[in-house]
Amino acid sequence: MNLPPPLTSPSTLLNWLVESFATWRPPILLGILTCGSYGLVLYGFGIISGPMQEDEGWSSAGVNAAFMGSYLLGAAASLISGRVLDAFGPRPVLWTGLIAGTVFLFAASYVDSLWLFILFWTLGGAVTIAGLFYNVTMPITARLYPQRQTAAMTVLVTTGGFSSVIFMPLTGLFTEELGWRWAVRILLILAAVISLPATLTVRSLPPIPSVDPISGGGGSVDRHGFGGVREALRSREVQIMLAMILCSSFALGALLNHFVPAATAAGLSVTAAGALTGLRGFLSIPGRALIGPMASLLGLRPALGVGYAVMLFGTLALLAAGPMVWIYLSAVIAGLVWGQTNPLQGLISAEVFGLRRLGTLMAMQTAMGNVALAIGPFAAGVLLDSFDGDYQPVLIGIAAMNALTLVFLVLLTRARRRALP
Image 1 (cartoon, rainbow, N blue to C red):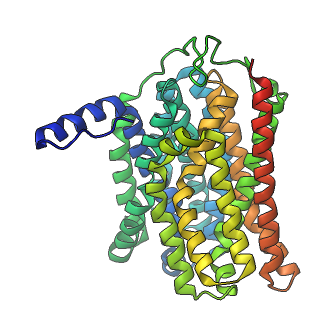
Image 2: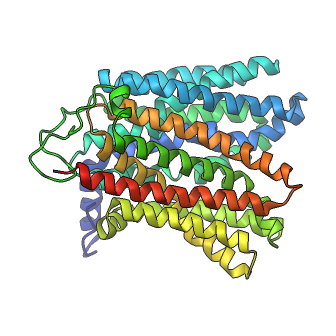
């Protein structure tokens, strides 16, 4: 990324900002689009679900079935959108995600039946996830900037990282003042408006360059020559990569949903545990801005290894239930690396999969990760019930999955070294 020049005059800074926007316009616009797509479907749903149950008399299980359905169907639909992205470019994927997703979610805000709400929200959320989430915007960014993937991905995820900061308070405000139905409609209009610049300007992808953007050598970018999913799955490197993503997502989902009760069991108050969760999310924004320096200083895999190790440390701090300062410190450090994990995984995926089938293979990876993310909290809950509410076995299980993730990262690094000429 281009660093700002010495501030000699306002015009110098203005010129730098204009030049930077011109250079990074696509990932900036795609990041803004990502802000809108995640804003309601992921971050806003947890805020409107309570008022929805109170106003409509719907059950908690029924309301949350819509959220679960959108992610499960979205995981399957991502496999289709990834293939379409590789075959026809971003235009059909982005426009379908924007138009169909908005229409279905709008319909969900008008129905009076819980079953119709589940149907429309599941369809709208799934189309949005498949067409507008990072599983689409990351491959597009990698293809647009084959020689500067790390910098471009940093711009994308740093911009997209403002989604929760912007949309969570707006969702709360609109829901409190106007009710959940109008909150959904207003947020959908806002998301559509801020998504239009990207859908209008990111129309096609450049041809795959003949020089490997990772190593800078003279070989083909698509070294593995993957013709499809089956061929990719026969690759040892891809197998290890997917196993790593499954373990990481499983542990992440379990820790996300069980952090607050586990922290309270370790001695924190509910208020303190909730505040730590919010702080971790806020710190992920500057953490994303550190992706470039971390990757340049350590390399992609060591930088990701630091993130995985911090997650393991945070889990062990909860497990030890020792001095509270360690839990606070782990939450702060985890927040800084929180936003780095997903984009670093995306960069390594581009390196492992190659650019030719990147959309298809990253969609497959995302789908598998989303399923693991959904199963993790459930499995942790079953384990918790089996031990009469004792969080020690749950945290041991999560820590074990974090450690296994690190092992797979080491194996991936070794497999990569053997694959290089």
